[in-house]
Length: 370
Image (cartoon, rainbow, N blue to C red; front, side, top):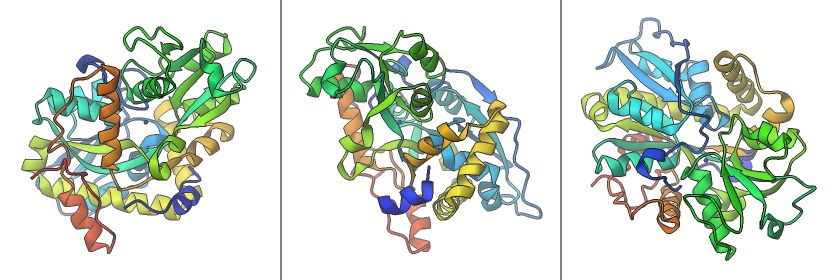
């Protein structure tokens, strides 16, 4: 189970639906290009090599991937791997990371629920497994306060989501449907104009007046707020217990079968990293921002970093029930046929680690491996 919200909020002082198969993206996508982060972790001095010489890990240069940012920056993942070397690569959207996983260019990835479900469905259950959670929350509806003062004012307005069928897009389509409004999922036209806009360009589009608001992940939401937008809704308020999966950890089934010791070591590093983040919120925030600076060339300014970090919860729990709900939203929106998710989770290695540490085991919501 994840840490109590009050604890995690303090600790973190820190996005499901799916598109058509070719259009999946992570909840926090910023494009589609992969980039070697040139920050190859050093092999632990004197450490024993496991069954693989290297493990290739993919993640996004986003705060919702703080476990990877901090775990690689601080060496906590490498420490568990001993003489097996970590090679890390960053991605800007889910499709490219999934493509890399399928091609063997990465072995393990931090990624959102939509591309995870999409890839699992497309491969007919043969491509990947979700082996852990990583983050919850970090998604907000932010609007131009001069044009939109209440939720009802969204009707007739232009609201951005990151990509057709990505996690926020389907969440917003579901919210619109529950309001009783109509929008064509493919075109985005209807009672609300849903504008698919890359998170990299959304702030400029908002400043120019082309958008009236956006349903987006962090740090894009806080970037918009820094430009004068106001938070009208935090998506956590729509979920039971105010929790929903935004980032989980996946592994290729081939790598899991051939190198279970390496996968277990990475999971130990992830659990250790999350524990450190939750115990050292300010240091972890600084570490994550240093990693972002190394990857992007500049750190996030305090006025964006602080509120973005505060809204994200770091957790080992994959929050599997919320992934099932997100998949249902995608089916409801007409972007995906009802997927067979049985076997998408393999939480055995994670629960072994949690049990050894005296922590409660986490649930696969009945869609784990048999």
